[in-house]
Image (cartoon, rainbow, N blue to C red; front, side):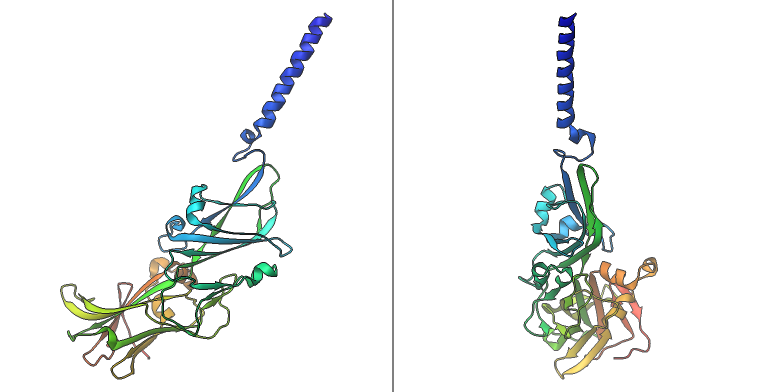
Length: 338
């Protein structure tokens, strides 16, 4: 009998030991997305603030810089990572910090169009102050004569990343695209040949400096100039079967803000006269459309990132301001003031 009890006790102990080993070794099987019974924090980035309402992060964003600040305002994590590496890791960036409440701030860039397009303030790193993470267009004066690398922004304040159990917790940071491509086309209505050198294009704004939360910082006005300007023959906007002479200018501008009043101006270089001067925001919103009326003006401006304006001039290069085209929409104007 003693021998039997001894065998039973040994068997029981062995079974319990094996069961305990199984429980410890397989803790990740008891909780979803657990790895080695660790607490892991992840960030996934989404860029669906566009007119297609579809996530284009993987195809448009190239690099991401993330800052994490704790409730005391201390910078506890900073990392710059390629979007391709984020995709290779499963579509997320791992945060090597303890679960807690954090403010997450992001500046991100797309395909490089101009080296060092922006100056990022590092005072937020040195002084542990998220409000110092502002961003300026890199320029030596008030003129921007080159293309800009696409700029994105993201911010989550006081996001709860605390965890009561082991496993993985993922937070999504939505991104907003700040840069906009503006294409301006001047067409002659009666067939007179136009040359690229006939016109001077510019957009005047004061949006060259953005705060950590993507709001504008008071700054001197800046002037955007075309990074591409050329002439050619195109199909008439009013009659596709008719070929007309045209001049095309392309400019890239920073975030368009509904609270600002940037102006698009075109000058006649032959006599230095002003051909047209329009409030860019007002004209951009002319084609917001019925299906987008639920959006605020700012949301529409943040989602739309490509604007095309077609203007018509007579043989004296004066603006025929009765009709224009905005993003392929024909707009009939009344009481236009220069």
